[in-house]
Length: 145
Image (cartoon, rainbow, N blue to C red; front, top):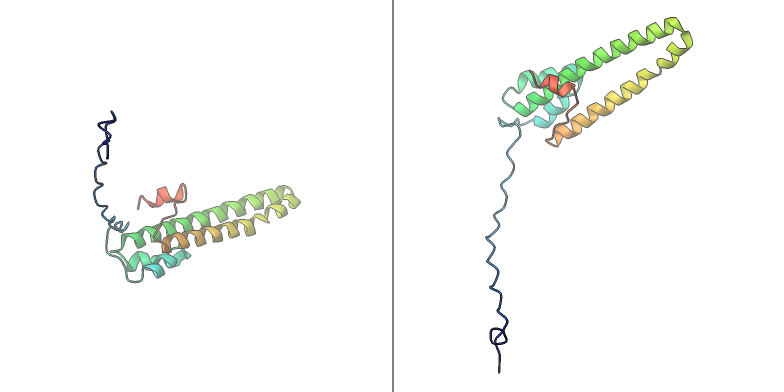
């Protein structure tokens, strides 16, 4: 003999509602929102190679992602030129005041150059993956164009 839970004074909990079927999530839309270039990878790499950023800027006008990287690459190049000029002036002034300290500050050039190289590689790797690397100050300035 089977006794039901109701006869023993315990109510049976209702069965849980059936979960709706899980639909696969649609792929994320392209961040560019525009036409995707056939040679986007090459254009993103060129965007961070100094004046070569003019090539994607002028050739891939429909691909907004390539345009973003090209503009940021150009602004980054101008910022680096300004940094090197200021650093050179500081080293010359300090060197004129005390020769030894200016020579020691001259060692900053290889370190700054290495840091810039790492920054460019990071920007290229992120860009090839379809991501964006924002450089504080520089990216906000480049977004104005």
